[in-house]
Amino acid sequence: MRFIALALGALFLFGSIASAKDKDSRPYQGPIIDVHLHAYPADGNGPAPNAVCPGVAANLEYDPQTPWPAKMGALMTDPPCDDPILGPATDEEVRDETIAIMKKYNIKGVLSGPAARIADWQAAAPGLFIAGRELSLKRDDVSAAEIEAEFENGAFEVLAEVTNQYRGFLADDPAFDAYWAVAAEHDIPVGLHLGIGPPGAPMLYPDFRVQTPLRIEAILNRHQTLRVYLMHAGFPFADDL
Image 1 (spheres, rainbow, N blue to C red):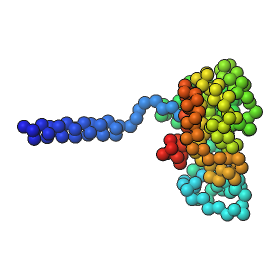
Image 2 (cartoon, rainbow, N blue to C red):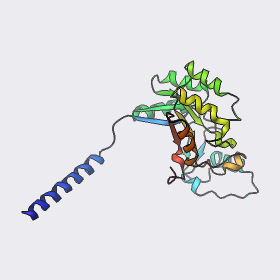
Image 3 (cartoon, rainbow, N blue to C red):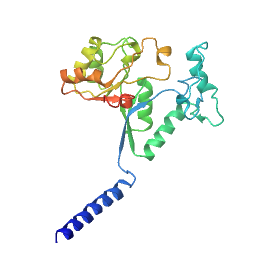
Image 4 (tube, helix red, strand yellow):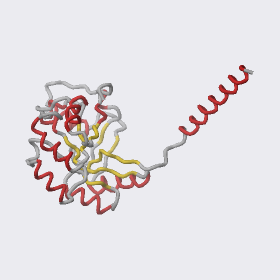
């Protein structure tokens, strides 16, 4: 009898695992929120259309005698491969192709970029985009009080993408304390760039500093109602995250 009970238990467990596997193998059909979407121009990385070779970031051959920005630019304007991935040629194509993919896969996106461009994308696809507000200390001459006023006037819903580390400010830098306080007080979600940047980031941005997810711990302890999502999944600091 005990053997039969064990056998039945094993069959039940096997059936449950098989059922779970069958369920997991079905393609996801629900909604998707893209929390890291940019409304940037087609020529944002050089004359459009840009192109990039598959896997190029994993195989960068670089002679330091060549200025790094020129090297990076050439990778997209003169890609060293026979099958580059070609990007859109116009700003309208960037917008319309993005919208088409989002509608196909039931995606809603948190969109950052110039305010006028965000408004244009929202007008082209009502209800598809949540307005973000880019921010980077030193680059943007805007105070925490001005950010607060913009939010209260309905200019944006999410403070993202915050790219302070490109200019040497990490998450727990006192220079950003007032902005964290505004976000916590008004329940503004914050999308924070961390981890590493593009290949050769310090050569493109001399003040760039690598940022681990642990830099956010003190902020979350200080503002326990704060909502933050960490962009790029903290790569390559998965263990810290």
